[in-house]
Image (cartoon, rainbow, N blue to C red):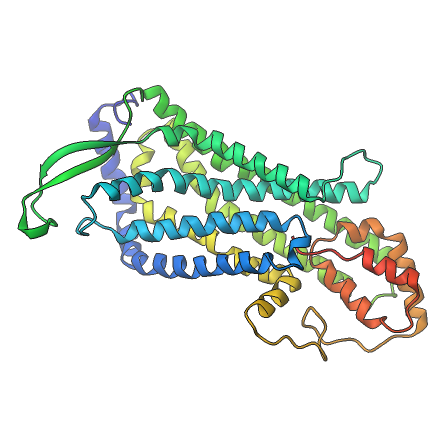
Amino acid sequence: MATCSGLNQSVFDEARNYYTELLGDYVSAYNVVHVYIYQVLCVIGVLANISIILVLLRPVMRKNPFNLFLIAIAVCDMTLMASYFVYKQVELCHPWYFSYSWIVFTHAYAVLSVFVHSLSLWLTVVMAVLRFLVLKGSSAPRSGLPKMNSFRAATVSIIIAVVLTFLGSAPNMLRYQIKDEGLRKVTMCTRNGSTYAQFYTLGQPSFWSCSWERFSFWTVGLMLKIIPCVVLSIFMTLLVQMLMEAKERRNRLCRGSMPAGSGKSQAERTTSMLTVIVAVFLITELPQGILVFATGVQPTVQIAMKILGNVIDLLSLVNSSVNFILCAMMSHLFRRQFLLTFGICCPQTSENVSGAQMQPPRKRKFLIKTKFCLKHEKSSSAIQLSNDNELCAQESLLTNSNKPNGLKKDVDNGKSMMH
């Protein structure tokens, strides 16, 4: 990049000294513990994402098309952490370091890690967009939008995410080429005390020019980092707004007919979880996008990126390993299916499906008011995300005896699965 920047080597040397003095002490202190942190995150993250896949493949979970996104994201995150774990095991003195098979793996890792990590981000973006369109169509049935809550729409959305990711990472795929440097004199880390080893490196192909280098940095920074983060923030904000409007509408129509805090707590919980998702992606992805974009503007920033390499890796690993926690916090159905999948008993007598203590049965007057609210709040119940099924399931448990068919139908229509 130095030869493509129009800057001489002295400028880069000066920038290297500046960034080393600015960041060197902090990064060196973190690098000492990074070797332990990344191993823990990778092992736990791979197991957690395998758990997500197994749970979402259960018959009950396969009914929801949005779980296709979560399965695809889990596959991407698991692949990223597993490949990163293997890559970090082979350091300079490892017996495989100078082998041709290792440089092939390094080449594959350089291409695959960028693709799967970016695909995970774009899958989250298209899932948020599709969810917004589903809720928009539910709240406005005459809006003219096609049916979005289907496996066909989810599959098309996933294909769009794959295409966008491929377009954004294509320059990075073309950037590397394995080069045989022949025998090189090596003073350490060779077998049998040999002073020479066959040396392979990753270089750029013959057609690679400064224009390609600049285009690669700009493409990765914009298409794989900044744009998806901005789009995700916009649509998550719209979803939160729709949730708040639905909560206010439900409170106006059903004031006094619902158990205290039942509707409000669910809306607030869903809103907080959406905020967590936005925060996780913004904290972990946006700084990386800004650094890559800044490198296209000021080439010396790449020195700071190299110094912060392990810190940037940590952000990516945290983003890839936290989804299991979010799924468990956002959906009682996921928690329950997880327990059933791994053979842990689920209490079914004194607790409802959300884990909260069951409310005693209420009088017929409450049933009539509940039926009225559900009938006039179809759009409100449709707008609620996955956690609203806890409220609907609770109402079903409270009224499962001597319940009119019309009320049962309305309650069933209010149910929604985790996405």
